Image (cartoon, rainbow, N blue to C red; front, top):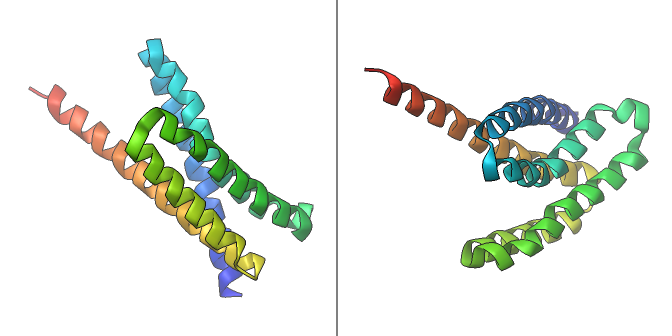
Length: 149
């Protein structure tokens, strides 16, 4: 029971957090203009697996468990497939991210219970969202300190 509740709250945190963060980042990137608009696509690739899984967890009473299991495997696919292209663009850093994504997806794939799979992906999504929020708050406060006389 505790694991189901933890999965629900992590999914709620991710659904609200990734939605608000994507709206804020989209507005900021559109105001920047130029090549920054292309970063919206990369943001969508990063957020898609976690948003897909968190929304399907929140809609589990309507969709059922079979659709949630399908969404777990889709989220793993959306986590791995874009990561495989990273070494072509970012060399060593992209290679390390791709290896981490492959190892994480392989580890989650071999977990027996789908509640454990969901929890593992939710924890990773929560960590990614928390890191993005910390970076956003840091950059906003850093910019506010630089604009003050």
